[in-house]
Length: 382
Image 1 (cartoon, helix red, strand yellow):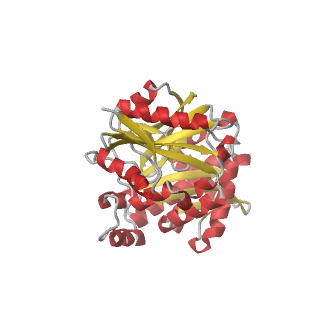
Image 2: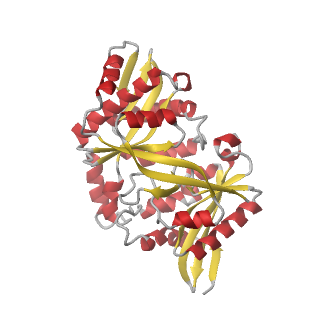
Image 3: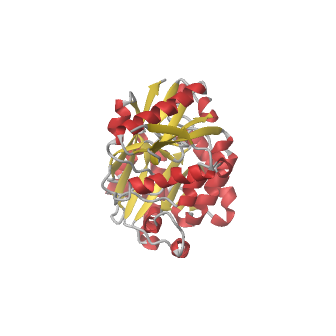
């Protein structure tokens, strides 16, 4: 049978692109169906601020008129300007959103994606990155036995072998950590927290959602400083920040996001989100006929099993200091208490965390969390 790879060109093609995983994962109890409208928005330039500094070409694989695979090849112009030793840099493009029924289909898709990248002057490909580094980077290689939390990906176990067989080598591992948040932290952590509470220079406060834009600007300022030297860092642009605000504002709660101040200056933050995947998993991608009402009711006062910490940051001048760890432990503890008391949560997930981020890995291990999922980012010279 002949495999045909063709570009996505129409609104109907994009819908077909989004629909494919619903068939491929229909028997996988740990796959969380995304809301179709959200998934379509991510691949529609007019609806995704990432396209203000990036371009992409989506492809569908067909066999005898039946769609059997998909992939995205894309170039982030901001990523091209980043230092090469931070993961991206000149000549580096990406691919992602990859799904395929068989290895030969994947091989045909990756060849087509690479050809498109070469045609754009790209000399090195990283993947899977779907599509922005701030969305769902990496291929799941460990942790297939439980569903991903919000903003984390899932995959079929065989994809790892297929990608490596196509000549891709591991570039970076990303990890998430899970922990039982109903239990008090170790005594040493409690002492560190109490010491911080006795320090008049330190204030850890809740955000004020009524001042959303102002609070977001404070967090973004810390983020851009704290993460600027990290592997894979690409600064968020105003259109992307607007998109993030629209998407996340419904699940932003004052007591789950903290800003730490030192001598009145914001120097650290921690964002925690109720796991929206718990609410959308039963909807099978649709808000109709009554999914919207169920989701709206859930959003008013989420009761969840899992809270996810997608982002933490401490300004560079404090990184690697005892103060940085102290502020982190304080924010984690205050949010832990709120998560259990106000939202009924029993489990926390932190990440993703880079494999070589020893500071964050040490904090995660000190509060007795363990690695529950591992994602690989691969690369190869074109």
